[in-house]
Length: 442
Image (tube, rainbow, N blue to C red; front, top):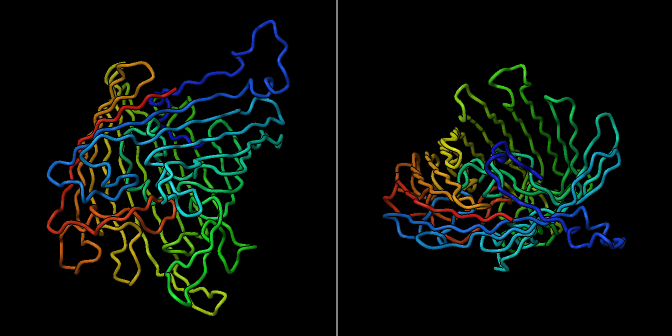
């Protein structure tokens, strides 16, 4: 499971053991014995959102933000997890399953048709994990697993803020493949993997992305069609952790990740590159941590030939995002979190679509107050401001209207939620959000 550096102290996930149902004087059956190490956990994620002055037709294009959530009460997600973790043995084995339900599950995108049919269900993760006693031991995952890239993760309880960043929005989210993690030493670990695509689709479905005669037949969720046997998606990451001898910096971490592979998407299918670098730093101030992250996504641009001799071209596109984070434990129950962002991308002038429908540049500020009043409950109040700082895609270069952050979610990354929306509301350059987030973890 991919966890980021903010998880400890923010997540309140409980676990119940199925072995507790077995009476002490009974001899467990083989089935019961197998289940005794399995834990059940999850959460119910709800929210209230108010978008002052903008209505609910146009909302910023960061991940999981849709017009359907604006100015109302929301059930965002229900997650149920089953887990049999690896023990300390050399040949340990286990599994992990995350099942998600609710509106956010519809736009998670792991089904062959992108989860757009309103089933309110998705598989977030489902993998078998084993250990091989090579050196310090290599832990393997085979199946569907979270992408190793990024500062933020899917789970609301594991992020410092309720809403996601633009950096998260341009990252792959889920892969189907094989991943291995090796702890070289206490201060360094490496992870590498091979997967079908950079996108989240688990199965494969043949589609005509252009809907036109002669357009290529693309199997979304599968490898590069011309090189399906030999070219997959490749992922690699390294994590460095400061040792105890570094004083107040001990426990600080530095992360770097690269992903290259076939996008596998229905809208823009092509070779995609993602780069990420991030760090979390402890400070001399008790309770204060700082963080920084950088994300890049781009397609290389290429032409492919389908079985009918038709040509399909992909334009080069790119996007970048930089985020600064801070968290301060004010009291035992109160935590203050802040995030500042700058996002900039291709303006669509080369004839291709932008990675994220919206302006060429965006500034965003987010402030979150977390107050742990009830047991097992995360309660947060969040304020967010998104500002268009560049030309809106779909408008003339001199037009500074907010085509903006306000529009439909979608783009280059097949892992990003996709919904139908508008390009934006002319003349509007700022979007405001006040949100309350209540999550019960079990």
